[in-house]
Length: 197
Image 1: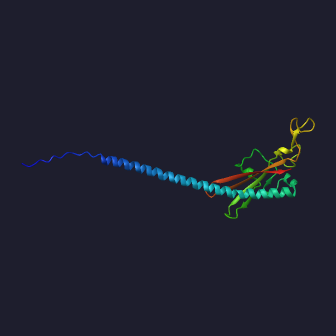
Image 2: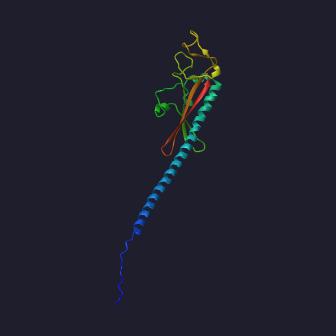
């Protein structure tokens, strides 16, 4: 009599488990690759923007040097516009940096290392051109704390309770520079300069 072989059906669970693990590992790998790419792109964009901001500082530096030199030679020159220097003796508060009219009279300087063009414009923070202390003019003025005297008395100040300036106040100027990047982005930097009247 021949022995009979009994064959039992095996039910394999290893294959589905392995396929599920492989699918999980594949999805995790794809997510990791995308995450690394996003981090690399973000770091690259931040470095690019930082480089552009440094290049835009060339415009701020050029305008500051002009303001300093002009104030030293003749402060009265700063009472009127100077188109050749990108200087506007008043500030129109209705115009924003994104408005093309804000950049009327702008000047362009080329960064010597990158040959990139940087535009700048200088605005005096006054309502009108002319001397800062004209009755028809209003300017943003500051004075150091040691230069302030007690509040004025009636008849001695422009208004009751206004402080008297014991020394010449400082007039505010805003220098704005911008640079257009090769990737379609741009950077705008601003600098506030105080010059004694």
